[in-house]
Length: 248
Ligand SMILES: Nc1nc2c(c(=O)[nH]1)N[C@H]1C(S)=C(S)[C@@H](COP(=O)(O)O)O[C@H]1N2
Ligand SMILES: [Mo]
Image (cartoon, rainbow, N blue to C red; front, side, top):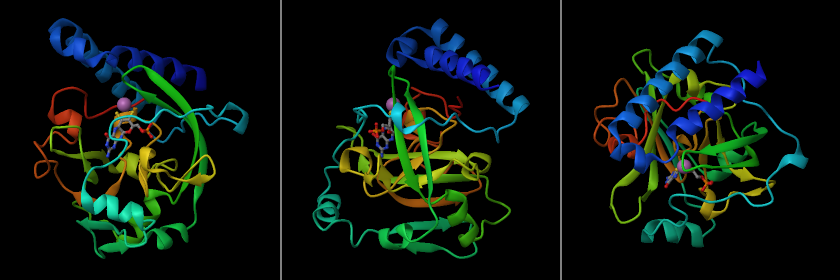
């Protein structure tokens, strides 16, 4: 089972690798799309609850590459970083009974899950790291997700590169309640550093790297992705670069 999933992960990683060249070549894009759809069908068949493989401490990569935004440029974020994120708040809003606004200290006080997993980036690199933080499901249960909600949308503190556009991502509620979906506060037994998404970032282990939103300010429960960005569910999805469903 694990071997099968690994093989699938490799397959979808390869199919999605080199996105720029895929966009230039419509035939390659069609192949990547059908591979993505096949992966999705297969995942539904084997069950979306299956766990991603977990590794041992000896497997941890000596260097975990940082990618995308590695240092948000806004004055507000830099002030938060300078004060050790003591005034940072993570909000949970939208289709919930009880909106939340939690400090990092409050997040740290919640029961945490630790997991050593492999991160696969579509740009063609992987790294194994140890992550820890409260399960997202715990916060969702505390907030009381309304029945009309279908997505969890993650609004980040960075604007990507020179685009000036805020990074965001979204997942469905199956992935949101998946036991390995956590709000990571720590990487390899140290508080998350700025490059890897301080003070809090998503780990959604059954999906590719770009879904793992860093610098999360707000989690919005929503019935549709229409009201966010260009409506395709994420920064890269809006640009037509990567698929919304990035299951591995
Ligand atoms: N807010 C935010 N989250 C982000 C990104 C980003 O640029 N901004 N890049 C994504 C991509 S493409 C990858 S591979 C991972 C990289 O995480 P890392 O820097 O911890 O390796 O973060 C993802 N989450
Ligand atoms: Mo990535």
